[in-house]
Length: 64
Image 1: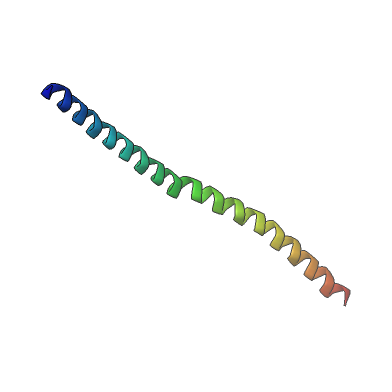
Image 2: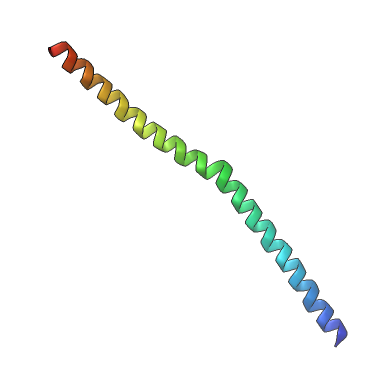
């Protein structure tokens, strides 16, 4: 009986450590990779819009 309880406790400890490691890896991947990709996508999107607006402003100024 004691061996079974020890095995269950060991399994719970190992499972908890594995789950914690997975959560840590997931958080690091998110903060370093996914967040950078989202920021880059947004910057690219707004860079194109800003360029288009600058072009329109230039055309308006030339028209006056």
